[in-house]
Length: 210
Image 1 (tube, rainbow, N blue to C red):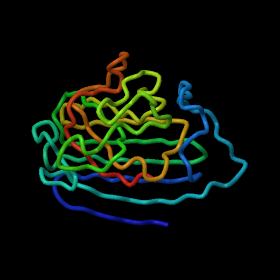
Image 2 (cartoon, helix red, strand yellow):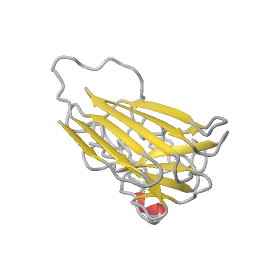
Image 3 (tube, helix red, strand yellow):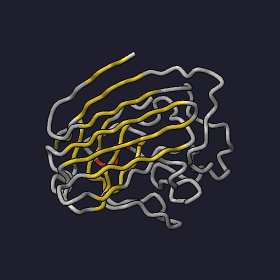
Image 4 (tube, rainbow, N blue to C red):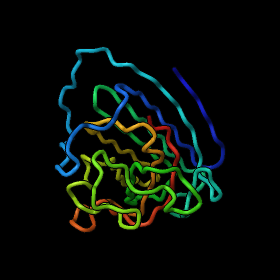
């Protein structure tokens, strides 16, 4: 099945999502440390069911795809995202063009849709949710705010403002619980009490995750 939705205005985003098993939540105890990411071989005992959905978006000051800082993320720059899920594994790849040259950015999958206020996109998506986190105090515990339990896509642009980033995690998204990718001001911290933090939210792209 293939669905195509295209929005129009300045920064373009494309998401390619191939879904395998329907649920993204491993049955691990939320209080345990999340499993590491890696390239371990997934089971091939059953043929996975695959669905593909393409979505397009564009940043503007008025949305629906928002840039909150036009100097750092100019209207007219682009981001493309490819999300592949199969056999309990998820790979996310992004490419950006036309951002500030020679600059570091953070980027993460977030739980809510983009909105006119940077905080509208909610906290980072976590495979195992930090039980101590609240809407007012997002997770900053490295046991939960890390590259194995969240989707981090930090990148540094080249002299033309272009870059790419990719990550693989050993889980699949829970349907409807991830709705956007947010670009942040700087690379993501890993320090206790600051883990997962990457500064101001510069832009938000709606993505059709499973």
